[in-house]
Every structure is written in C-alpha cells, then in structure tokens.
Image (tube, rainbow, N blue to C red):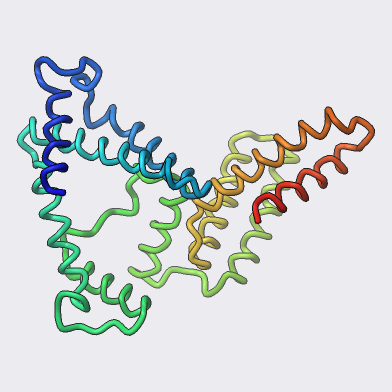
Length: 252
C-alpha cells in the first residue's frame, strides 16, 4: 500500500517536472479549484446512481487533485503531502479520545459531542462562517450554526421556520407584483436562506437534497419527452403524471 502511494506521488510530481505535461505544469491553486469541485460532484453522482465501479475511478480523480495541490504547495515551500497526512492523522487521534484515549462514546451522538468539544479546544481550528468560498447553501447553514452556538441566535424548531417561510413567500409575492428585479433577488435569497436553515434543523444537507431533486427532474423530463412523442393524445399534465409514475417505479 505504502509503495503504491509513493509511486503515485512520484507520477504526479513527474507530471509537473521540467519534462512533464504542459497542462499539469500550468496548474495553480486557483486553477485547480474548479476541478476539485467538479470531481467532488462526480463522486456524489456516482454514489447517488449506486455506480460503485465508476465511484472507484472518481475517488481516484479526487486523490489526483489533492496530490497536485500538495505538489504545488511543496514547490512553493508551504507544505508537503506527508505533512497533510501527518496533520490529518494527529487530528483524527485528537478528535477521537473515545477510540484512542480514555473517553467513552455509547452512541453516535456521544461521538459527535466529543468531536465538537475537542474541536472547540483547538483555537486554530475555527473557520469563519463569513467565508464566501463555501457553496451558497452550505454557507447559509454554516453561518446559522455559528451564530446559534455563539449567541443562541436561532429558531426553536422547524415549525418556526415554516412560519418564516410563509412570511418570506408573502413578501416575495408582493415584490413580484412590483417587478423590481433587485427586490425580487433579495426576497428569493431570503426564501433560500430560510430553506437552508430548515434543512439544517432536519439534519439534511441542502446541496445534496437539491442535487437529488435536480437528478429526479432530469429523469422525469427525459421520460416525459419520450412519452410525448409516443402518446400525442395525452395532455401535458397526464404525460407528466405518467412520467412521475414510471420514474418512481424504476427508482425502487
């Protein structure tokens, strides 16, 4: 295992060497951001599709991005892949005293509580929720988590958020009638922020939920278009209902 990993590291370093690949040599921290995001979503897609053979390859693509970024960091004397591994190993041991120490975790809730306690003790681990590098829905969740812990600024339940969502929808309807694009954008943002917090309360990742709904729509739309050419006498609503029924059965 160690030998194979070292061989892989050597391969990626060769790609950026003097006689390496022109494309790989041109890459920077900034240029690799989009590739890392794209490969991450391809991993999620493979998991959603239960395409575990492809998942193997997609995980390799993410590993490649990690190695390329680490190689750039080593070239600039910032850190090495060995230091990345070392830091991760140390953190996993610190955050799991119930495994590597004398703490006890009877269930996953206990384990998560211990993790957060250890994390809070590590002053250099605090990441600002104000960072705009997060995907927007995740940033909304992280901001709310931060202020909930820091100042108890939060909604008590999902029911409260549903009421807020109703209020935001009413405000959106009002600005839609006025037709002011900036106001519509602001109110739609409030709706999305509220929905992200509803996901947080229910322990749902909003990015994953939205991606799964998008995938579901694509499948239904493809079936709908096929049915429309095969069954021209059916109405649009009937075709859509039929497409929903077919895709529901195929997903079971």
